[in-house]
Image (cartoon, rainbow, N blue to C red):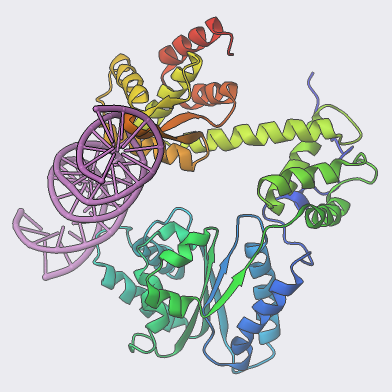
Length: 408
DNA sequence: TATCCACTGGAACATAAGGTTG
DNA sequence: CAACCTTATGTTCCAGTGGATA
């Protein structure tokens, strides 16, 4: 008979390393917290709130600090009867226009059953509905738009909302926007008029360095992990890996959590650096697979073309050759092929996702072009394609070729 | 010094598929 | 139903680019 047994040799409270965990105190961000509180002061004083714009890489504490401070703010403001504060948070990751953000906000505010559909209305009609909902709530409203860079240059909402009172669209409600962005360039590409208003107060969150990450890990580990279950140097190692890569606390915590899970599954009593190393490569693999899952058919075929080239040891490799490979793949999988320009777009996307890398090739009279190659281990790419794609035959062929070339 | 290669990347446009309203 | 809305994806067109070459 199989039997389940509780394993508790490593973790005491694993959730403390998870995404949704809210720590009691935030480490290493005192300065940002001071500035942030200063920017929020008008809310307490009962004035119109500032619009605030936060930027910095993923995992540097923007969302964590926001959640932490707004909780505190709500609590402290309840002492003043003339301030009626509502906070509305929305993650815009999958919302790539102002229109969709506005629709999502309206639906969030409406009772279930009263939601509106995500297309069909003129944009201004959606904004009107949003104003109506905000008026309904009244008082001071803080709108937290996380990962706001997803809306790209369709930023009308960011122009409209801060001016809503001046334009008599809002009367009772005092709205403050808090925009959070992972992308430094996003700020600069905004309409200058939007920059003026949205970026009234700007907070920059720099990446954590290795010692800071180690402190953060230390304080979380003391809650999450059993005493003595971490070998010397493990936290330092996690911190160093994350600092070198992204400066992200999220990444450092993920490494530690996964390393712990690996140790636990192997029935060990402590996490070692080897476990961290194993966690690192697994996270890398997951990142690649995640990226591939999002791809369209032709995005996958374009990637498969590069993988196939890599199997034949023909990478790095110029666009033209990849395109030819792509055409044969299309044929053998009975898919209509796209124009070269479109495949070029897919290759650019793959480059953004960090799955491909490109070297600029300036060879004078023979033209300037990119040479693409895989930016992830060949084997993880094939594994991920296998899990994600429905092109078994083609992958088998590529596997065979790779074996012949001793590359797998 | 002008020309040229082999692209890159931006922009306008097309199409189809989802939806609204009156 | 027609008229109108947004979105996703792809197409067509074109102005750069910059070192090698004639």
